[in-house]
Length: 152
Image (cartoon, rainbow, N blue to C red; front, side):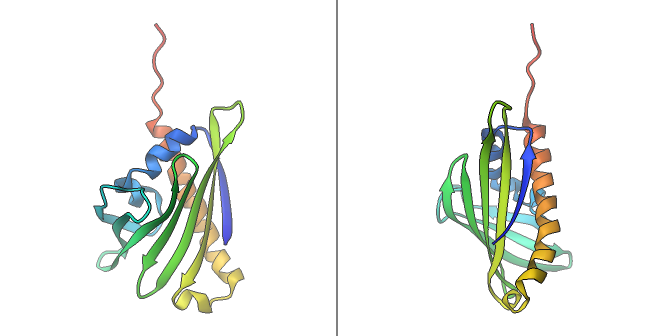
């Protein structure tokens, strides 16, 4: 799997709050254009987000399923864009000691469909910039949700 990391000036809990809100998925995942439905159990294992990929009027409707969920630590997803294929995506959160911040690492690779015909090095060239931008958007959302209480 291809890996991309980003330090974020927000805690793991603050980042997890964004990841665990399925309605925000299209706001940070590059390529997801809209959310049609979110399983009320999201991000529990087996829950799904129904999303569309692409730009109107050329949209593909599919879903993303949670394979592993360790709240505040790890989210492993099977992202589907059929008939184009499926990708395994892992999002791992680790503390940056003493900083009240974390590092988010996103790992992804194609697991089925025509994308497997593309050489791994070329898949990485396509995924790396996309995932860097996804992590940048996740960063903005997590930091934007941080509330600073005024001192009395």
